[in-house]
Image 1 (spheres, rainbow, N blue to C red):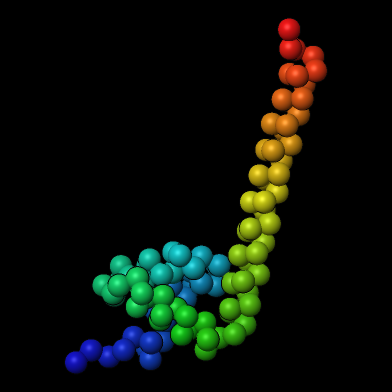
Image 2 (image 1 turned 180 degrees about the vertical axis):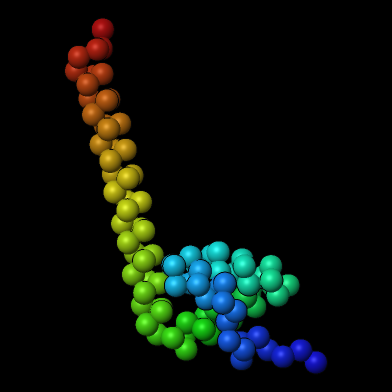
Length: 94
């Protein structure tokens, strides 16, 4: 009979990855180290986050900051591409 992993504390390495805001890496590490499915690993991590609400808030804050950073990069690339197209249309078009 196997013990449900959700009732065991999270191993140190996935817990450290969670504190760094790397949810996907924590789940992958948990899967590789305990030979469990992705669904079981995600359930174990979710249970750990339910037990530590401050960690969940920290993780969500880091993820939203990462999303903002990616959005700003896409915005910058869009502005550069739009500027290049406008320059080409106004000054280089034959």
